[in-house]
Each structure stands twice: as structure tokens, then as C-alpha cells.
Amino acid sequence: MKNPPINPEAPHPRCNEDISEYNKAVKDLLKGFHIEINDLYSPLMEDLRRYISKDMVHLTEAGNSRCASLVADLIRKK
Image (cartoon, rainbow, N blue to C red):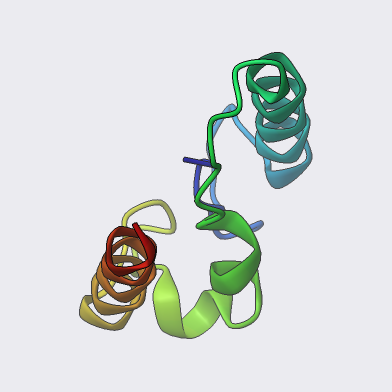
């Protein structure tokens, strides 16, 4: 699973560029193990204001719902 993004205005030591790099490193590392990656980062980046809560880090109900749908879709594929 790729880590989801945070609001870029968040006063947090992590930033989306770091998260993106971390996600890429994990994807590269797992490639040899034939593990399917469920990308939660890219879909949430489409509408951060809707999916990331006012604390600028945690998911809103819409964000939780979107991630749950992505996870369920991957499970159904199996």
C-alpha cells in the first residue's frame, strides 16, 4: 500500500514530496516479490481539500470512504 498524502499546508515535518519518494522506494523494493501495490496516494491527491481533514493530516469521511473503496476493489480483484 502506498501512503496517502497530507495537506501541503500542514505544519508537519513530512511533506508530500517525502511521501512520494517513500512510496517509490517501497514500490521498487517490492517489485521483485511480485506484490501488488494499492496506490492510495494518487487518488487522494486528486482532491486533498475533500479527502484530508482540517488537521491537515488525517482523512475525512470522504477520504476514509475513498480508501475503503480502493482497498475493497483490490480485494475483489483477487
